[in-house]
Structure formats: C-alpha cells, structure tokens
Amino acid sequence: MTPAFNRSLAESIYKVLSEIRFFRSYAHHVAISDSTGEMLRDVYQIPSGRVHVILNGVDEDKFAPDTRVGDAFRAEIGVPGGAALVMGVAGRLVKDKGHPLLFEAFSKLVSRHPNVYLVVAGSGPWAQRYADLGPTSSRSARCHLRS
Image (cartoon, rainbow, N blue to C red; front, top):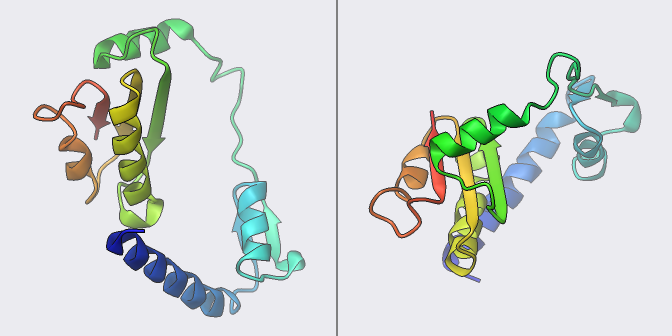
C-alpha cells in the first residue's frame, strides 16, 4: 500500500466516524437507491424506520435508448464502435465522489488494456487531473473530459 492510499484510508475512516455522530441527530434520511439505504443502516447504524428509499425515476417513454445518438456522440469524442470498455462518470469532480480511486484505477487499466475509454462529465478540482490525461499523455485518445 502506498502512503497516499494509507492517508486516503485514514481520512475516509475519520469522515465516516464524524458522519455517524452527525447523522444520528437527523429524524429521517432519504436514500436514492437500495444500496445507499443499506449503507445508511449498516455502516452509519441508522435505524431502519428512519431510512426511506426513494428511487430516482426515469420515464422510459421519454428517455428510450437511441443508438444513433450514442454512435454520433462516440464518433464526436473519438471512441471507436469496437471499444472493449467505455466507462463514464458525471457529477462534481471532487475528492469525496471517489475521483482519486477512479483516476488511479483508469490510469492502471489503460496502461494494460489499450482499448478502454473513460468519459468524464462535470467540473471541479479533479477536472485538471483528468485533463492531464489528455493531449500530452499516451492516454490522450482514451480520456475525454466534458464540462
């Protein structure tokens, strides 16, 4: 394990312990997925009666898959149709969202598997690190940043 990983782990443990103390004062918690609800109950020890899962809904009639749009987007950003794996992440590009782990994992993965691509949509402190995987890097064709 690297010193950076150990530091990150220590920070995560401290954060979870602080949140456990803080979260207990809430009357109710709303989770956006079953797994988030489980985490609140199991990790944060929130009583089941105070955890409510409300799933994010998508109207499948309005948002039906359109392969032509997907193919056009891939072509626009240079992802070939035969890519072995295309990963994507959208949201605030901050440490708390797990970007250090994604960045490290992608950097290792792409060095071993050249037909892997990452599409990042968002802005924040981690945007520059993803951008650094760009033009001057051997990974330039595999990491695409959209803000």
